[in-house]
Length: 124
Image (cartoon, rainbow, N blue to C red; front, side, top):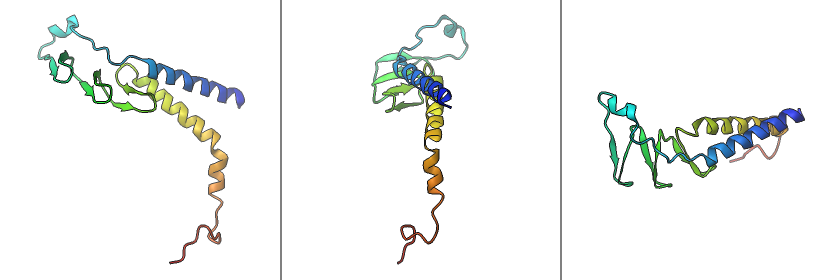
């Protein structure tokens, strides 16, 4: 069990560092295959004063455009976008596994309360 926990914690730290230090603010500008697509149109970001590809949104916290932006996460102090979405998902899954394994005794204690416990009964 200790080796399993060490592996999960190592993978969690690795996913955290990947999604934290991935630069999601680099946009794929002027790709040659985009010019050949019928109906492709570039949009203009008024806040960045720059053209941006489709499905790109401006982050108000970072003050930069992010491709396929999901949200700005305070845990990783970065936006979750196209380049780090997979590592952020792995980070949250590994964190939930670690939390559920380490807090299993606490959850089992919480289920053993009875109605005769004076702390759980309320009198109005």
